[in-house]
Length: 285
Picture (tube, rainbow, N blue to C red):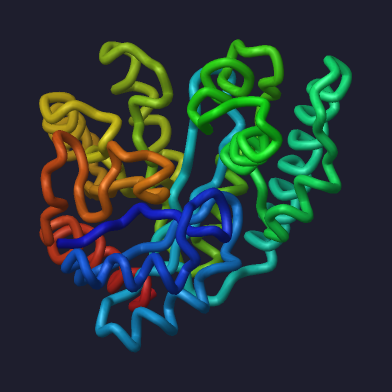
């Protein structure tokens, strides 16, 4: 099995980069990509552990792209030396994350909830905090019993303490990933929240913008939809990837490392026939 979309504690995952790799080893993963949100802080640690475990490691990232509706997440797979342009985008996104977190905590505090931003920081001591950390903090403060309850009642879109995430420009993100020797891949494309009729022309535009891969196989996608997305990807010229979007078994029990849409095992072909040849082309350039 392989997995081209996972997260660690460097962003909003449950396991440290090292623990993630060890977990992947116990599940028989041979190729693993770490794609933390808006950070590359865990890559060196995970890469070192992967080498010790005999796992092929793919250095990656997941960037939040500015979009009018839905969610637009762009994976950068096969990163080499992190470019100044990518560093700049990461710094912008991290600043936006901090502003968002402060805003959410401020809203809670104004409503009389016993929360404090400095206390949140002390609880985690991580460079990249997000809503899952705030949800865990709310459990610790006995505001909610479970993290999912925090999302359902307070933190999900449309709930009282939700604040929009800042994104970066698509062209800047594609350029930064390319500058770092990686390949831009559109993550879970159905999160764009477009009808099938509108999706094709939008994806065609994204291909023209420099995105080269499409994550057709994702656990948030039904098998029939994944097959349809793969067919659409072929038609438009994308290569296809598959991932679990694994954050940890206690964070999302419905997402298991090495498994994707329909809980199917992620096939080796997404590495050997799809991503690897494209990475080799990048190296040759």
